[in-house]
Length: 448
Image (cartoon, rainbow, N blue to C red; front, side):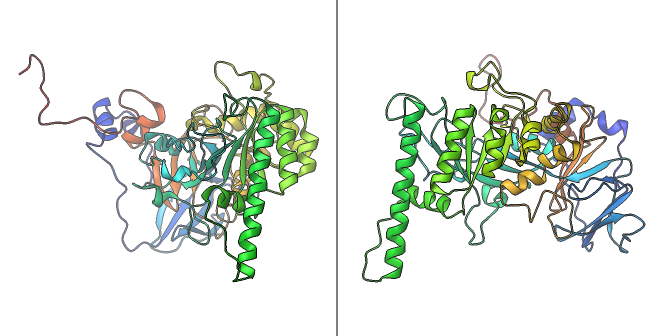
């Protein structure tokens, strides 16, 4: 049973540092023989259905097997009971646009690099992933940057504790790493040749590459239908774009200005690919057009610290205006732009600007899951879905509310009462340090 005491919160700085730096580690104890875990007593916020007071969620093998009021859902004998009385339990948060773990992909050799993958550069041991767990995040879309027209393949990560990226990856049915394709327009991918110098040249380069992918797909299909025909040579970049053309891989498109947004819609219609618009600082100016195209938006409400011309018309009203127009809306952190630990506050800001509360909570969870093709597994508290939760000490939309725990597949991956986790949640000396330097050959003072 969970105990939230003043003493636990007042663990000494020395212990916090030792735990954070890996000298000590409080791992969750094994629970042999207990296949069912029961979360009881919390106010449940399922997202896809009304809230439930004094609720029960049963979990077995990482999946939700029952959910409802305590009176309606009996706790099995021998279940591992997690007492959450007085707290709030909601689905783990989904960030559709994150840079934690440094998922750098494309380099400076050219503006279109669909062949590179974030999977090959992610550091899942980075403290940035632990910070995301401290914010209640359980799934992220790890994205390359926006300095390229095509910056590479993204990676969908489940934020379990794990030592390798393979342990955290969502996967397509064939076992390949699951993710989208990062694209961008506007000023970020402009530059000296071979990068484009204008918006028009940017669009033209993208068109040329997609036309090449259409041609490549046609040659592959022709060879498959006629054994006498030679298939084309393998081209990793064109193969990735063919996945986009076939709908397997979603385009996640950085775009700010209203004219850039319209260019993305034009290209998506021309080549019939699925796209999520990201940032959409001026989405409120073309909300009807976005909604008519049936294109979802991943919105950031706090952007470009220090000033960015493309974001000068950013508005807290954007999520509301898009929602009222009928467009699907999720929120994202763009971490490090908005710290993952403060993700809940983005929903609060959207509500302050008029977005309905239920839509704001969905924008943190189920709406984002849909934009990643993961809504059958995550984003709401429903039987059969992954047991990914965050536990809060108050209203999810209150600035005073803190994430107390984060659970992934029914296992706790963040606990504010754990000194190491608390240090990452609140910051301070040692927070984020990966390890303490040790060496038998280090000399200390005066060359001794």
